Amino acid sequence: MSTSATKSLEALLASLADLQLTLNDNHAVQAVHAEGILGRHLPREELIGRPWLELVRESDKDHAEEALRAAQADSGTAHRVDVALSSGPDEEPIPATCWLCACMETQTVAVACVDLRGETSLRQQLVNAQRTLEQDYWSNRRLEARYRRMLEMVAEGFLVVDDLSGRVLEANSVAANLLSLEEGALVGRVFPVGLDNEGTRALTELQREARSTTAVAQGQITTSQGDALSIGVTCLRQGNETRLLIRLASVSDSQTDLGMGDDSFETSPDGILITDADGVVIAANAAYLDMACIQDAQQATGRRADRWLGRSIVDLDVLLGNIQPDRPLQLFSSVLRTELGTQLDIELSAVQTNRSGRSLILMFIRDVSRRIDSEEGTEVHLPRSIEQITGRVGRVPLKQLVRESTDVIEALCIEAALKLTQDNRAAAAELLGLSRQSLYTKLRRFDIGDSEDNVA
Image (cartoon, rainbow, N blue to C red; front, side):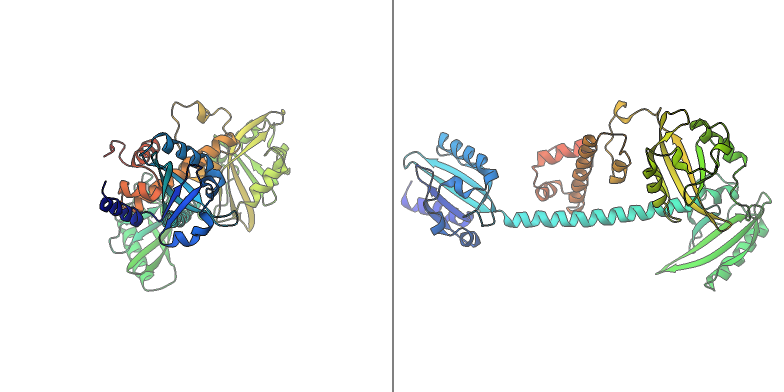
C-alpha cells in the first residue's frame, strides 16, 4: 500500500476513533493518539508504558484479555469488545467500544476506542422517560380501578350522561337493575330509557333545573314497570364538556339499612363477616360458619375475628389498617383457622361502610384451597402488573415472583420504547441497546405486537 493511501486510512481512523492505542509485544501502551474529550480524561502521559489490562475496569478484564488473545490469533482482523477504561483506581471509568487488530510484522496491536458516554446518557434518558410513563400509567390505572370499584359499591344507581348527545357514558349495575335492564345495557344508549312518559317529563325538568344551578335537583320518577324511584341530578362542566350525574334509588328501599338477616346474606355461597372498626364480629352468614366449622352464629359474635382469620393477629391488624371508606381491600390472601384446628387458604375482600352512624367492615371470604394452582395449568400467562404479582405473595415461591417481576419490567420497557419510536422496531432496538434479532425474539416471547412479523 502506498504512503498516500496509508495516510488517508490513518486520517479516516483518527476521525472515527476517539482514542487510538498501540500496544507492544508485552501488551503495554507504546503510542497514544487521542481526539476530543476522551483524550482529556485519559491523558497520554498516564497511559504510556501501562499494560492494556490495567486500563480496563476490573469486571471487564476477562473480556479484554479474551479479545486480545483473539486479535493475536487472527492477525489482520479487528475484534470488538465493550469495556470501561480508566487511567487510575480513583478515576471514573469511561464506557467505550474498542476494536483490536494485531500486526504480525511489527509485533504490535492497534486499539481504536469510541466513547460511549453519549449513548449511555441516551439510555439513561430512556430509563427516566420509561419510569415517568410507568408512574403515570399506574397512577391512572389505580384511579380508574378505584373509581369503578366505588361506582359498583354504592347501594344506589348512578349514571354519567353526556349532556350534548344524551348518551350514557358510565352506569353501575344497580342503575340497570332499577330500570329493569340487563347489566351493561345502559352504557351507550340515549337516556332516558326504561321510564314511562310521566317519568321522562319529570327527568327533563330536573335536567333543565340542574343546568341552571350548582345544587342537586331532586325529585321522583316512575319506570315503565310502574316502580317509583327517587332521583338526584347535578351538572358538571369541564372545559367544553358537560356531564349530568344522575343518582337513582328505589323509594321503598332508600331508607333500608344493611340487611344482615335477609335471604341474600344468608344464602350467599361466599362467607360474609361483618365486624366493627376494631374487628369484633357483629354478624356472620351460614357459609362463613360452615368454613370455620362454627356450630352457631352466637359462638362467633362478640369475638374478635382474628380468632379465625389470619396466620396470626398481625393479619387482621394489617387488613383493618388498609381499609378506608374510599379504599376497599381486594383479594387479600390469608388463611382461615377452623374450630377443628385445620387451615384453609382464603381470599378476602373487605369494604368499610357507615350505617346509622356506626362504622362497619364487610368482609367477603372465599375458600381457594381447592383452586387449581397456576403452576399446574397448561398455559403460563405473564402477569401484566406489579399488583398481580404482589397479589400472589404467599401462594408462589419468591424466586418465581422475582423472575415474573423481571419479565414484567422488561416487557413494559419494550412497549415504552415502541411507543416512543412510534412502533419503529429498528429504532426501538437501538434505544434499548438490543440487536434487532433479540428484540424480535422478546416481542414473540412477551406476545407484543404482531407475532407474525419477521426479521427484515
